[in-house]
Length: 142
Image (cartoon, rainbow, N blue to C red; front, side):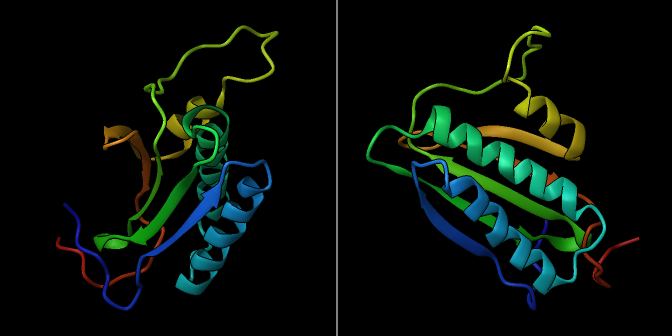
């Protein structure tokens, strides 16, 4: 596992199950990225945050509950985003029909992030993605 970069501390925030949580999550991560000096790929990170938060609100969070968003820098300039929810179900990439109005979120995450996945937690799951080489750091082995 990658090591955290000491001068760039992890950030986390809890959001309620409501539509306005998605832009709030995106703004929260944008502020973290700005503070860490991320310019390259910031738009890709923010789009993935929007998709993961939207999925949590629409599919992963039971009524009356929320989701937790984590973002933190990893060693060698990588960045990890996690969305924790307490809902049932396991998301997966599917190919929607051209006429479908949704269903493309994880396709975007898969295309933009360098890695992504789902892990179990009790209750619920964690949907995560990672981006390589978005932070400048001198702590990378050759």
